[in-house]
Image 1 (spheres, rainbow, N blue to C red):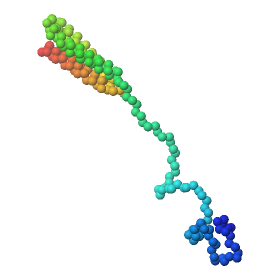
Image 2: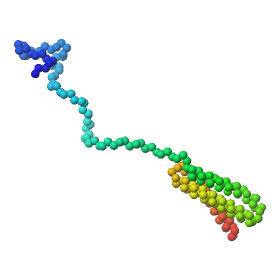
Image 3: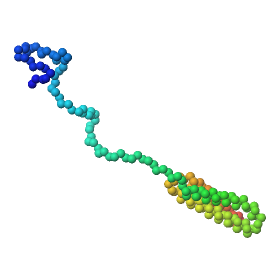
Length: 170
């Protein structure tokens, strides 16, 4: 078959002579003639590493968003208030001891026992509420302060009672 780009060679022409080239075309020697190749889309370039079968595609995991911390620990706040009130009452009652000493011995012992129980009950309540509040998933600062104040008051009252008992018998 003849190609449409080249005119057919007349039989009277010399077979060794090259057909005249169109004026706009380059010489035939510079353009090699290859058979027409079908046009396919560009194939992907593969690396030298061995190809593995495609793994199944899973949906992307949602990013980790931490839960916001609660605004506060109301039980810890209550424990701190109880501890602060107990400490205040204990300090106020200790200021009243000089006034009570002018009274009878019976009044002094009633006052001491009464203030001791009030202080011990308030301190124990602060420690228990603080311990419960410290176990909750909330800020622990107020609960820790309440535990510290309450524990210090409990130790102070226990030491005071032990010393009074010791001095009474010896």
